[in-house]
Image 1 (cartoon, rainbow, N blue to C red):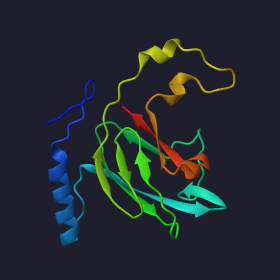
Image 2 (cartoon, rainbow, N blue to C red):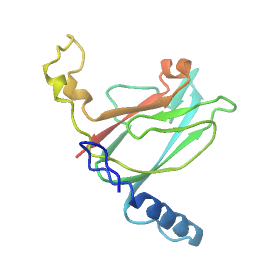
Image 3 (tube, rainbow, N blue to C red):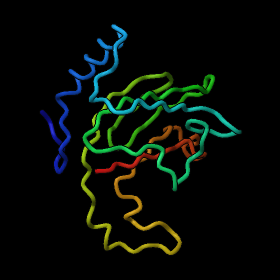
Image 4 (cartoon, rainbow, N blue to C red):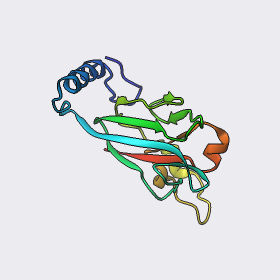
Length: 157
């Protein structure tokens, strides 16, 4: 078993869970009950820009709300007709390129940086607690990322 400093992430059951999922799919049976939702994210050219599931990045939107300790399967897909999208998911360090993949992951309990509570807040901007346990995922092509091909998830305890 491996853990991150300050986190309770347990990595060892993922391989067995992935094997159970594969067997269930081969036999047409339901997936293991440990896996919470299955989520699909389409990285695509949309409305003259680059979007995820047809939406551009909106700081006020949590595109996924996740409970710590849960297992999820994410399926990032590139539906852009030849555009290359190296997808990067912060916190879990998952990266893929120009295809559809499935990723089975367990969400860690993320420690909060207490130093942020004393930082100065800029007028009109969200406070630091707004960003606690929020992580983005995005295309790593800088021009795609700059044109809002990004989404965010929030980790809840």
